[in-house]
Length: 401
Image: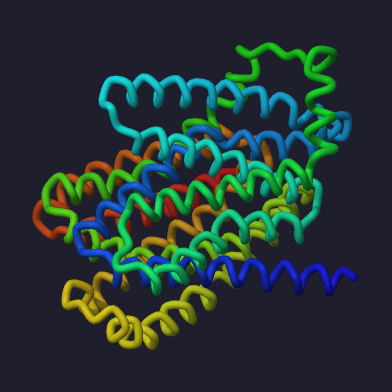
């Protein structure tokens, strides 16, 4: 039964990652370089805002639940969802005011996508939280892969496809996934709603103090990966960003696979280990990560000519130096993430966010220095420098830890 569950989860996750990866290749072919660059900005912004809305509360909730046996799952999740509902209300109000002042519906659509992206992502995390891995991967498959596959399918019957139509299909896909999430988790939702006025009151100030390191961590770690794209478009046009985004897609595809295979299994294990076993487990995962990234880089290099021929545009000509620098940056970032979770498991929250702030500062300074002179290659170089600095910082923190 366990093997059956793992097999289904693996197939769903593999289909999801493959669809997301090929969807970006499809857009690179169908959209102009400028449109593709704008799409990269939109997606990066929404993904970044999803993390801000979430504020990494899940990590705090999961740690408290696993390490504090007195806390039941409903108690742990209740505080988290009260925080999210306040965030949703702020987003809706802000988008409504912007829509009235600018007479634009794009922001309203993007705001709904943001809310539903976060909502379904938290349901995905909740499924992992209660160890329902098949359900988690099914949610991820519906919220990501299904609407992308449908978009690719209907493109054969349309004269052209544009960003607005893609956003509408994205919203429809998330709406369908949200309906599934509420139906599949209806007992959990009913339990939360029935208890909302009876128990689980908490002091917001104390909770926010506990949450603050995770908010700083989230902002510091993710800001460079959206700032690079905005800085490129500030100094260049969207076509330069399209080249950077195209190659970054390969690295992010491998990064997503790394998180699914390594990070997802590492976090529950590291939270349960004692100090001595934590070092052994971390070293084991770091060693296994090296061949994973090396093999991934070789496979991407071998498949690049195939995708280059499929797209058929000179703006995406093979640039091995750009690809290598992006991959190296993601490699050091991934290794640093493993060490980060080791520190996080022992409540070393100040150390975690301290290293992240250094990463943020090095990234922003490097991006502003290198991008004006080297464009997309400068962005890749800046993120490599900052990821390497983060890796060195995490090693130092682990050593004194």
